[in-house]
Image (cartoon, rainbow, N blue to C red; front, top):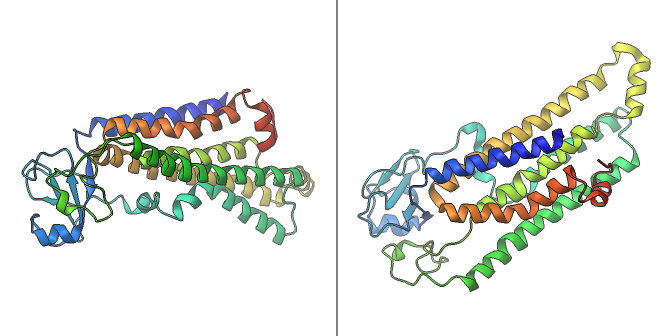
Length: 320
């Protein structure tokens, strides 16, 4: 039951963060623009914009918050017109600097797999001390799960992002070329970029890859701790309390796993809230989250229900 409870908490807190961001959206959808074109046009209060954004729903640059200039020496925004889009230029707290890297390679691929790096470090330490590293069956199951997670990362990138994006281009009509910010767009952008409704690829990344993969693996590690083995238990009990290494491992490794997972959740939720508040409409955020369920739900069903029992036994090695 606690496995289901952990997943339910994951779904609940994720949806609450998304709702909070959508409620603060205020009918805004900002897209980044060409900073060079912005500075040359001398539209912003500052000619030293390090980043620039336009609200695609603004009818003109005279609308409040239509144009945002972020300066390199300040986290606050200066605007050509109207009130500031508070927070769009703000950097995350220094401790959560990885928030800005979650959507970039290689962090987007490596961070979800951090439990396996901890496992690898533990196995290396055990080998150096000539201690047992677990059974062959445990190693075989771990490799299967690693291949599963790498496959899910590829599915998220090639199918849920690139393929779905191409399908969307064929289905949704072009926005045309009649928009006030056309001359500020990057050359790679389509005409009137952002006016056509799409789905949030960042939300798909966060909730189909960044969070569910480490959540699944860490929950399994709690059920089947790789830092414990029958051999370790027997040697610990035979040598008495002087041998504290197994105890230290039993404390340090779960602490690292849970701390890492908590850090990843906070960093991801910071990115989620900002994405929902400034960069996508609520329907686009919802569409992105619904797409992410194509990976989240199978992982939940595999780990917590009897619907995919044979698959669970293949990857996790236990039955409910």
